[in-house]
Amino acid sequence: MDKNLLNILFTSSLVKDILLLLRNGKRDIWDILATFDVNRQALFPQIRMMEEWNLISVSEGSCQLTVMGRMICEKMIPLINTLELLSAMGKYNMDFIPAHLLTKMSDIGPCTVFNPSPLEICEANKEFQTSSVESKSVMAMTTFLFPNFTDIFSEYMERDISVSVIITDELFNKLKKERSGDLKWLLGYSNMEMYRYDTNIDLISFTLNDYGIMLRLLSNSDQIKYDYKHILLQSPGALSWGRELFDYYRNKSVLITDI
Image (cartoon, helix red, strand yellow):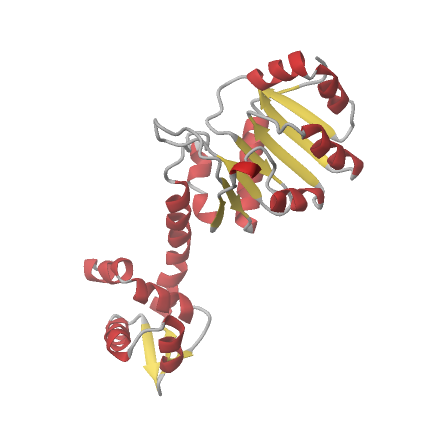
């Protein structure tokens, strides 16, 4: 691809936004002006440039993608999704993601970042917890459990939700020492599976339900290792990616049948 065209696509946010808008069909130029709240002096040179590069065609005051423009637009979307995801996750340690799933991160789609208040730090994310109790299954990989974890799991068990949890050796030993009764209680349910992972996991927790993924990640910073933020992913691609990630670690873990 010509370097000038690459510069146009990746240095002009207006060009990118117009192409993505036209992906949904023909649009009137005046509608484009109103959509992006720009003036004619800013828009018309971009329109002419895209027309010259055969990205769009203009007829009777309306714009639409050419075949070339549509092909480029379809290739841009996964890249844009990846860049937006990395802008949110780039400061975090992503060493927990196996190589074969790193190449699929363009399928994950956009994310939402939650910044809990100090009062919410030790609580499960309310929005995600609501969707979890409405799910048929919940899968998690974690280095910790909330203080009220018995209440959380009780609701799952009462609703007959299939639950699979991977915990670290350190957490397993802590539960066995300090909450052995609760651990035995959990293992007594037929719809509950718990696994031990005996190698370091480079994250705080990962939870997958029928509607999304909630990540609590470690920072790359030497000063702040955990900033308490939650990253929510909810696209169909994210759900598929999340199931692959969980299966990857479950296959490397040992099922806990007794303590």
